Amino acid sequence: MRQAGRYLPEYRAIRERHTMLDVCGTPDLAAHVTLQPVQRFGLDAAILFSDLLLPFVPLGLDLEYVAGEGPVVGHPVRSPADVDRLPPVDVAEAMASTAATVRMVTGALGSIPLIGFVGAPFTMASYAVEGRSSRTHARVKAFMYTEPQAWHALLGRLATIAADLAALQVGAGVHVVQVFDSWVGHLTALEYRRFVEPHSRVVFDRLHALGVPSIHFGVGTGHLLPHLVRAGGDVIGVDWRTPLDEVATTLPGVALQGNLDPALLLAPRPVLEDSVRDVLRRGTAAIGHIFNLGHGVLPETPPDQVQATVDIVQAWSSDA
Ligand code: CP3
View 1 (tube, rainbow, N blue to C red):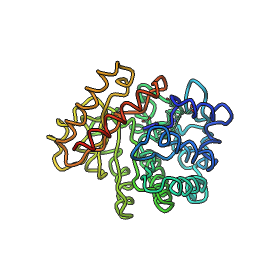
View 2 (view 1 turned 180 degrees about the horizontal axis):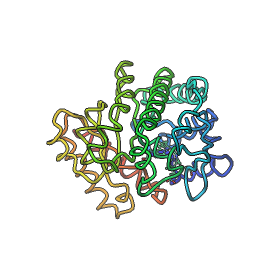
View 3 (view 1 turned 45 degrees about the horizontal axis):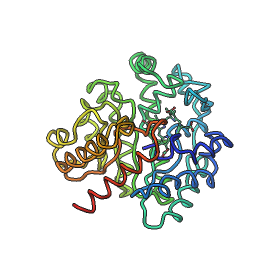
View 4 (view 1 turned 90 degrees about the vertical axis):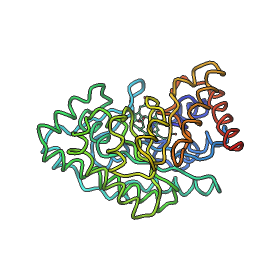
């Protein structure tokens, strides 16, 4: 998760010379940045360098990344007419540079697997409607309740784009696709089933048909996990709030990913070590476990703490 984020000086050096959209849209640069953490830490897998919101560019939403703020959408979706106006998107054409990046990276990685990713319809819609990161998600919820027909039309469009983009990445060579529904934890289970689940399922059904494994991740989704399982995903990503052995008890037969609190990478080394081993131990309760953080690496994380984490996990795996 955010392996190539701002905590790496070699990433920041590239960003001093290029905008976020330029790095994402230039296969040489995106491939180079994808490989940085793998080369530095000896990770077991790479995650494609891209961003969840790139499809907003061909959708005409006027996406920009603003220093100190994150993504900002110049033309947010605020009415049914805005949904109707969204242009058709040929993902293979509009996102051709992403496919080129995947081909370059898989060539360089050899036997190390590459994780592709897309945004789930709700999390994409949240940024499309709110126009930027939101604490309460009030505007997107208001749209959902006030304009249910336009809501389903919007999520339908975003689901098709996500499924097409996942298929494009798979065609170019990714080995697994992670679907980020980062902010869906803001909904109740009832809201999820009514307004989101059918659309998320479209993305997972496409991945299933392609025969490629998928990971379904969200933050603060302890109350939604059975619903995320029903929508799809071979592996469920869990944030740090719920211990993995508890999740394994309520969801037997489900493989899990997670779930170290990213803030623990700021803790003293013995605390970090104990916490990593605790996650690994609890993960053995599931039928399968991919060690990961419960959310993205924080920008202030010292790289040597990431290295220590990787070393502890790899030592555990070779003992097992
Ligand atoms: O290793 C990697 O970095 C993988 C690539 C990756 C990025 N974004 C690059 C990025 C991935 C997997 C994402 C996913 C993403 N993007 C999500 C889902 C994951 C999550 O955080 O829950 C979301 C919600 C986004 C949208 C987005 N893009 C936000 C909210 C931000 C601002 C982040 C912040 O902390 O300020 C971005 C920008 C972004 N995407 C950065 C990176 C490395 C920082 C860009 C920079 O300033 O250089």
